[in-house]
Length: 255
Image (tube, rainbow, N blue to C red; front, side, top):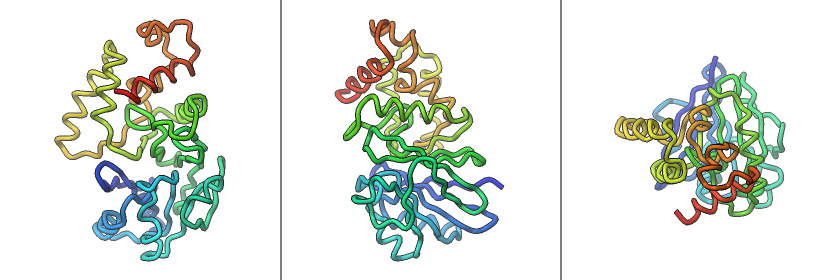
């Protein structure tokens, strides 16, 4: 039985994610920007929190962890490499480790770039990947600590997941990311269609920080840094992929 997932808006533009196994009743939350919205979502669903999964150390992803742990007794999982700047961990993780929510095991993926200790969680049976501020909807995280080489390698790891994987990212930056994508990839018909669909999704109240990997591959400029046509349009036909990625990231930083 697939895991149930609920996107929980927090703060101004963050998302936490509840992940529930109907068989065992175990429920995890991925990142806790704030405590109250997570409590409210748990109460609305009648779920009992058992686990807290942390992607990276930024306050807008861990600000509610300690209070939520005190309130629920949930076990905290996070990157061993970042343990010195995370809340106390019950389970310290590295790439390739597994996190079980009931009957399903998720795999930890090391995705440095936004921060050097950033991890993602992939639950293959339920086709879910929690990527926070590494792969974002039509974008990627700003390189606060890592290098273009690190971020591109991280994105390549995520691109290797099945196309039907639902990417669950950390923020609703969708409108700004789409506007930037359109500015650097104006001839992309799939991107034009996506912009129309996003307007409809937002009007319907659908969560704005999730999309399939297939859609990201078709429309996210940072996943298209290897595309020859995109390189030609930027007069960078001789550029290696990381040079094209760094060019796009620099443009986005000042967009």
